[in-house]
Image (tube, rainbow, N blue to C red):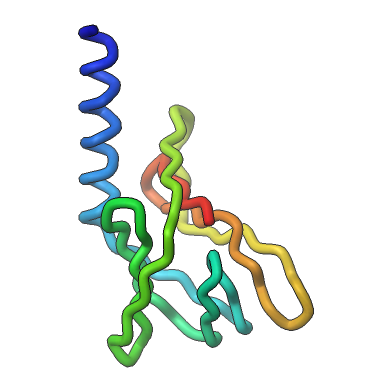
Length: 106
């Protein structure tokens, strides 16, 4: 029981930490995360619960469902985006959050 409680608290604290940190990503072409389409540009991203909130340069925000993965290895040196291309669109699969072990999976 103690082990489950500790793991639960660690998971919760990771969600709280991820929810308070914001970071920037830049899409150099049209992009898609989940079912949400983005135009090229710079976005501020903040994790709130099980959603990533993307805010563009015009303060327009959109929420996208996300799965958080917290690795146990070395922290990511910088924020990076893993994506595949479908035509002219980057399909975002994962965002690795720089300075943490957190990855956002779409």
